[in-house]
Length: 636
Image (cartoon, rainbow, N blue to C red; front, side, top):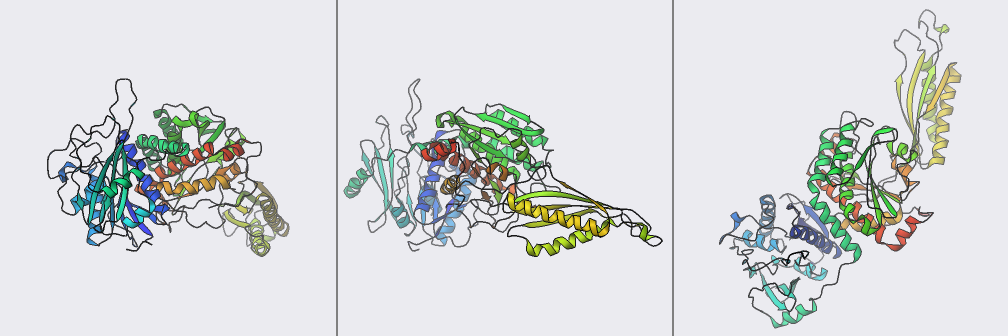
C-alpha cells in the first residue's frame, strides 16, 4: 500500500465497561486514533462487523479492554477488566482477514495482542504480575489519579506504519509481545515513564507511544534494546498538556459512556412505541424518567403542550438549549428518526450536565413535541420556553452526515368552497358547483407555477369534493402547503394561492373561505460559527461531512434559528441513499446504526456546546445583544 492510502478501517469500541476509568481512557484513545488517521489525510471508516466495505487500504485495531481468557495460551490472567467476547470476535475476524489479504495492520495496545493471536502466536500479554499497576493506587482520602498512557503516534509515523507489512504498537503494561509480524518492539525507560516503539526490519521507526508512570509505580524488568531509540524516547517524554477545551470534551465523552445504557434505552423505547404529534405521552414520560436517572428534575407539560418537557443543569450565564423531538409519522412510525433526535439531545445533556457550572453555562433540555404536524417549537417559542436561550442545538438523522440543512419557510392554507346542491340531470342549473371552483383553482395554480419565484413551491390535496356523481357538489375543500426561501417570499406565494382560490369562486359563482394555519415555519438559517465548530468535531466520532443538500423541506427549528443562533445538522445512519419519511429510515433508526448515531450525535452536540462556552469570541457574540451572525454563508 502506498502512503497515499485514503480509506482506513478502524474497529469500533464495543466494550464500554461500568464506570471504570480505564475504560473511559480507552474510549479517549479510540477518539485520538480516529483523529490521527484523519489528520494525516486518510479517511477513518469505523466498522462494527467483519464485513469490510470496499476500498479499504489499511486496518487499525485501536485496543481498549482485554481479550477473553479463552484466547490465552498460558497462565490465568489477573489483569482483566473489560472483557467483551463480541469485541474479540470482531477484532480477530478483521485481523485474520487483513493478514489473509496482506493488508497492513496497525495494532495499538490490545490490538497488538489480537494480532499476536490472529497470527497463531502464543499470547502472554496482560498476564501482568500483581505488582504492576495500570494506575496509581491512592492513599486513604486521596483522589485516584489515573496514569494510563497517552497515544503519541505522530501522523507521519502512522502513515509509515500503514504503508508497511503487518506491524503493531504495544503498550508498556503488556508483557511478552516482542515480535509481531515483521515488526520488533523496542522499549526504553526514563525517570518518569516508559517509551515504546516498533521498528521494521530495516530499523525504520513505525510507531511511538509514551507511557507516563507515577514515581512509586513498580517497574517490571525490561531490556533497553536500542541506544538510538533511547535518545529518541527522551524527545517524546514530555507530552503537552491538553487544552481546557479538549479536557472538557474528553470528560463529557467519559460521562456519556457512563450514562450510555440510559441514553440508548430512551431512544429505543421511543422507537418501539411511536406516537403522533401532541400524543407523545409515553415518550415525554420516558424522557422525564431518564433525566431523573441522572439526578435532575424535569418538568412535564409546558404552557399549552402537555407533552413538552424541560430540564436544566448548571447556572451559568450562557444558556445552551438542546432540542429533543420524539413525535412519529402515521403508519410508518419513526420514519423521520425522531427517536434518534431525542436520544442524542438527552445524551448531550447527560454529558454536559456535570460540567455546566465549570463551563459557565446553563444546559437546558427541551422536549419539543409535534414537529411533524403542529409546530411544537413555534408554540413553545411563543409561550416563552426558549426565553433566555443563547444557542439552540439539535441533530437530525439521515442517510449521511450533512453539516447543515437549508429548509424553506412554509405555511398551510385550508380552502373551502360552498355552493348549492342540485340534481345533476334534472335541474343542474339550480346548483352552484363547488367542485368546478376547485378545478379552476387547481388549473390556475398550475398555470401560475410558470411565474413562481425560485424556491417558491405549492403542493396540495383535496379533502372533499362532493358525495355522489348525480348530485352537483355543494361543497369542496382542500389543504395547500406553500414554501419559499424566506418569509417575505412566502407571503407572496400565499397571495398567489389566495388569488387562485378567489378566481375559482368567482368563476363558479360560489363562496370561498380561506383559513391559514395558526403559524408559519420560517426558513432555517444555521449559525456559521456553530456549524464550523460542529464540522470540526465530526472527526471525534470518525465522521466526514457530505455535500450539502439542496434547499428543500421545512421545520419548526427554522423559527428558532431566526431568534437564536442555531444548528440543525443531519446525522448519517450509514446508508447515503436512504430517504427520510420512509419505512427504510424507520428501520435504520431502530437498529445498531441508530444506536451509533445517538451516541455520536450526543458527543457532537456536547463538543459543539463546549466550543461555544470556551471559545472567547464565539461566547461573547452569543452573549451579546445581537447574537445572530450577520452572514449566513456556511463555513466548512
